[in-house]
Length: 545
Image (cartoon, rainbow, N blue to C red; front, side, top):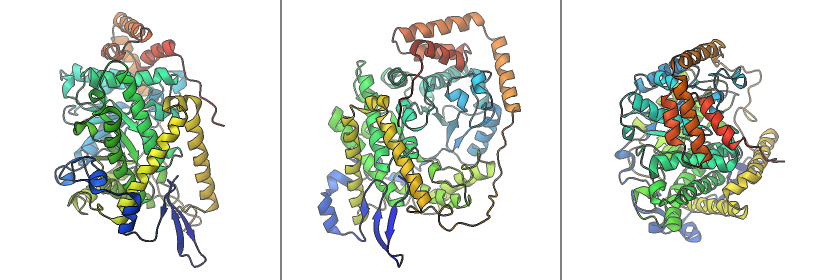
């Protein structure tokens, strides 16, 4: 599921190349290969900015607009996170990608016993609207878009973002935010889930309905369907796209079943895809995904409007490709991952920093990742022309073959009864877990090469990485702040707002309006998530063995 597998003879000559998705690469390609795969210029490529958008969503590609740089960042208290965000923005970052700590992701307040030792450790601690007020102080919500990388309580975080705008006197229609809000991938690929599958999907779709179908937050992308984490958990590149599309269609169908038209929701979907692995496979994956998304939306829902057919999102990260061994090599890996994203037509890119295999990035390592994107954008020529690899016998053949592999993976999901049923039963989780095991076994056996890990290893090496030591004082500060908020807020209003949330949840109504009111009253994340836990219960994970 990672880099390609190379079969070599005793002279180290390559006899076969098998990409992670199962495609075998030939020594060379010619016109006969395009004929073999049935390549057609209009149907498979087309002009930039025209259906099926294989080459680009826009006629001029990066010449008309550079890709957005949005480094994943957040740690400790909201005040510490605010400082890091301002540093990145001052150095050319054009969007935020917010990291939350595990208690926040799991719907626990910082003073909950379940949060002990984790407050602010892997992301920013958020308990109430007061934390957002500190974190986003001095940041223009109307000009800086924010990715909210959270899933189980994404509805609460987007409601809090809207409540922040209202508190500042900003029309919510003018703010731009993208909550990840993809609970199905979370169950498959990470584990930060709370509620049973179907209520969790309904909460995800409450956000989608509220933001787009009801038009409450027209500049927000209410979901970022995240093949990224499915890939990092063991999926192949083809499975990453295929499973993500199956998830996206499940969400669209849920909202359509509520009485809306597909056109009202599909156009604001965004995606988060991974960029580690073989360069050519990643480029083909992104090109095939852009083409296939447009074709499938038209085929399934008869959507004709161009902008609704756009596959928009972030191609980034590459964290699984980073190594603890010889960490400076990760700077090189990051540059090539950024190259793959750009050649694949990314709208937004965020690169993992070289020290992320060890720790939260330092200011220096975060800036190196940002400057990597800047160099690719300003010096290397990636904005010169649209889709520079178009017309390559190899790339066009590989893109067609990748398209077929993606469709095969989507068909596999259908044989399991659809993606929601497949996640409930653990079918998808079993598949990716088995593949992750095989990947690790092959690394240990050396049949898949990882530089610095199982080849070109330096004996006795010590990594020169500055560790971000966890400070328990972070939790003390956060808990003290939470106590101050509780003392200052209206207990009567809090009780009333939480009661209204419970009534909406039990009635099967969209909970977003009630959550916005709760956030405005400074209800805590733990209190709001606690109400939803009472109504829906908690998920019992299916066995994957």
